[in-house]
Structure formats: C-alpha cells, structure tokens
Image 1: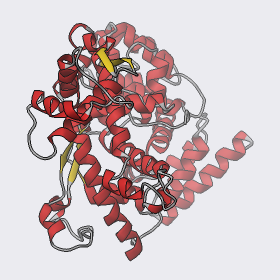
Image 2: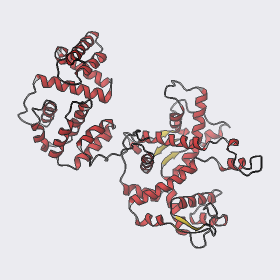
Image 3: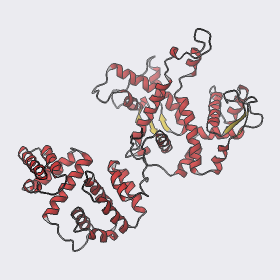
Image 4: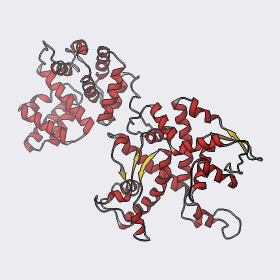
Length: 477
C-alpha cells in the first residue's frame, strides 16, 4: 500500500475540526454518558450497560421512542471503545471515567481529534455488521451448539469490510479534488457503481445493475448509521421508492429523479478522518501545506500531480514562508536540470514565479544568460513590466519552445490544449521544423515526434516526423 498515492486533501484547521468533532452526536453522546456514569453503573461481560440501566442512559441523552435504548447502548459502546470509560473490575462490572475523557475539555485540538478517530473506528466496525435480527435467527445452527453459523446468512465479514472501505476510498478520491467537501454530493447510484461496474464495461448488464441496486440499499443503511459520526452528510433514499415494491429500486436511468436515490457528501471532518485512516494503512495521502517547509525541489517535483487549485494553494503556502527574492532564487535553482522531469519542473517554476511580486526581479536578471532559465526569466520580466529586458536569441526561443512542449506533454499527454499549441507553433513559424531538430535539448526528438502525431495536417505532420528522425540521428539514439 505504501506505493499508493491519493490526491492532496485541503484540510480545515484542526481547531475548527475539533469543534466539529465535539458537536457530533457520536462523540457528544458518548462523552455525556461517560460523565453520567458513577459508582452504581454496571456493565456486562462485554462492557455494555446492563439492561436495567439502558432506560436511564437513554433518558440522560434525551432519547425516546422504540430505538432509544438501542441508541443509548450504541453510545455507551462508543464511550468504552474510545477510552472515555474504563472497566475497572470485569467480575463486578464496575467502571470509571477513562483517561481520554479529560482530553475533550483540557486537551489540544489534536487530542480531541484522536479521541474522535477512536470513536469513528467503533462506528465503522458496526457499519460492517448486518441487521442483528438476521444474526439472531442464525444462532443455534441446527446442532444446538449455540455457535453462529455464518453460512446461513448472506454475510461475509471480510467482504463487507472491504466493500465499505472501497466505497469510502472512492468517496475520498472524489472529495479530495478541486471542490473538496464544498463540492456537490455524490449520488448513491454513482458511488455504488464505482465499486461494482468494471472500468472496461461500456454498458452494465442487467446482472451488474442488480448488483448496483443491492449495493445502494446496503449503503443506505450504512450511511444512515455513519451520519451521526460527522463523517458524512447524507440524503437517504426516498422512502416512497422502497414502498413501491418488494424488490430493491433499480438505479435511475436519467438525472430527473436521481436525488430520490440518495446522495452523500464527505464533511471536512470526514475528509480529515479518512485521510488519517489512509495514512495509518500505508497510503500516500498528502494534504495541502505538507510541502510548505520543504525545499523548492520537493515543491516542483510533487505539485505537477496535484489538481490545479490544490497546486496553486500549495505554492501560495510555500511562498508565504519565504521572502520573495529568496523564494525566486530557490525556485530557479531547483528548476535546472536535463533529466526527464526537468521541463515539468520549469513549467511549475514559471507558474510559481507568477505568484511572486516585483521584488524578485534581481533573481530573474541573474539567470538571463542561463541556457535553461534565460527564456522563462525574460517572460517573467516582460510580464512584470521590467525595463531593458534583452531580446532572446533564436536559439533560446527554440530551446524554450521545445522545453515548453515537453512540459505540456508530460503534464497532459496528447490533450486538445497541446494539439492547439502544436498547430499554433507550426502556423507562426513556417520553417520551424528545419531548425527545431538542431536544438540541443534532451526532449527535442520526443517533442517533434509528438508534434507529428498531433498535427492534423498530413504534410506538416510528415515534416515533424522527418525532423524527429534527424534529431535522433544527431544524438545517436
């Protein structure tokens, strides 16, 4: 798992997240019961409240109705699992306040979030368990042994856990992108399909659609259970759909009534929680701001893989810790190189320098004669209205052009934007290919080959391929 990488998450401040955690029904109820418990509180062998005390616990939480005692029992289990309550004598069934209870009022925001994460693990474990009624029916498996016969119920604990982890992983991927938790809720059918429908299946079969429908209903139950934890905001499946027939509702065929099929959004607290779990599992799950105290080399190497908004935010945080002139010099030094990733580093450097003010001008003037950096330095100085910017030589113009296309090719592949850039270059410079193959740049042949592949005009494409051949022959490759 350590090689697995996630998009960077844009996390809210820990103090804000800690306040959200304390206000969740999951943690506030558990804390309230932990403070309510006293010398007379008794638990059973499993650490749960004894039956005769459940009504009092429900009353303490202000719960009523037929599910009140079940909800109170669940809150108590969370209190025990999260360390808010300790069982001091298993035989007597006595309890005392746990060491972590004091952290909720006297600890740091990180302390509070650590307790919330422990509570979250408790409810996630419960979310992978089926309806207890089905389990009770499966007890006493024919031989009177009293053992649980899992073969008599449609439940595979490992498969259920993997299913939920896969769903939450996909929800994280969708959330830790451009919009973050402020983005649109994810329709439940789309989320279910993301783990059911194979990527190479153009149209799902009836059997696959039925699997998606079954998964939707399983997720409906789980997200209803998870919402009080603060992990998600959930709009449940419309009860009217469930009342229309005995079978599970089929996924919607269009967008007209997709809202009736449920939608879920990961909260800022949920984004924090899932990232913490991913890190614990060995994933590379970066957060915006992780690179703020790293060198410019780390910034330029890693931000190309970020979504644009995250890369912009990461760069702003990095620049905020440095004086503009020092930052510009560090960025320019890190942008040098002839390795495969160097053009993309220089593109990121150029984008970072666009956020630096005019006080960085001396750093750009220092590299005007640099073969690798002189072109981008002239671009920056011109854009910032600097005086006496020397014009670039033809060799520098061609080198910068090859470098720019190489960076775009590495960043976007054969994109429409790159095709437009290629067409524009060929149109503006009628003799481009007769000169470009001579450019002393490691990526010259690859760039010319890509231009031949991307340009729609057959004659120009042929000229580009011929130039690429010449460039390879010149380099002996």
